[in-house]
Length: 379
Ligand SMILES: *Cc1c(COP(=O)(O)O)cnc(C)c1O
Image (tube, rainbow, N blue to C red; front, side):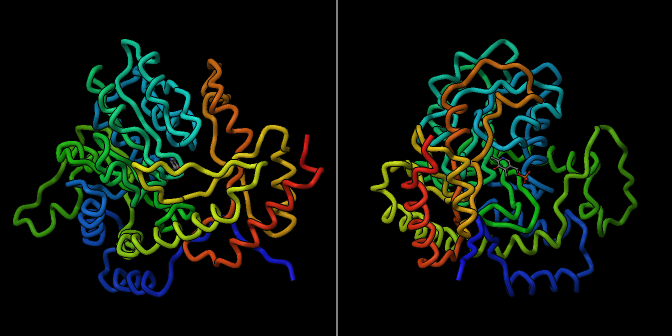
């Protein structure tokens, strides 16, 4: 019997269905309602911040944060190169330019030692990406940002529940953006959140996420009939109250989901650490890894494409890791960033999700061992 083990699988079930049914009964399905407000306070607390705003996805949360920081066309923003398109794109949505900086070879987040060389008079901020959820170097980045008067934004799309020196992701920069896409550790199918201790920033983002007018819920129950005027260009970047209800359950389950993913990561390490043809992902001692993805690096001389194909043929879901941004045509001609460019060619994500059975983990590990030992994958 051939197995089929997906790369990832959302962990949702009866509790989430019950929560959806409560929202149906309440009659408030659209966004910025009671369910969103409850989710926001619970999520902010879980992320160690004083405020949160529920959004349609992480990209819109990144955009809102930058708008609230006052970004304008022509500005430059320093961005960790190895990431999903949302990070660089979100800078361009404001007519600003992402300036990509190379990454650490071990944990793949922006290399603080290379940030200062990229700062110009046009630089206004830094976006650090917690790659696959493991937090970037916030102490070093904070010092650089402060020295140059820049804002610091955490792309924490994958990092709900991660910690850095004992502090939760979401409390590590001026603001943080999270994703609740189906491939992330906690999910409502789609969704996102902006988190910050700065109440003015959250307030401004809140206004912009609902077409630049005060949300309907703040006008409910008023004795008069306040009619907002349009004084600022806003968007519909709202999460629906249905998604928020799902997310409230997911946030409650987060510690257990993280624990289950760590079990899978530990088992992979146990089963694969002696394998010469691959490098396992680094987990640094001063931070915790939420394992949104489990990404291995194939050694030089191994054909990644052939490995991926052979794994899929044997029922093991896999994919490339994430993207080197500076090589993408959309961003134009850029100076080469060797570490990011190299890892972009050598990464493979293998199955990782809460509840992945030990037996399946072992099957993945054995299959991988077999595949990389075969002559067919040597260049
Ligand atoms: C998934 C991801 C995003 C985008 O999230 P959406 O919710 O789909 O907008 C942004 N940044 C990183 C690092 C991601 O992994």
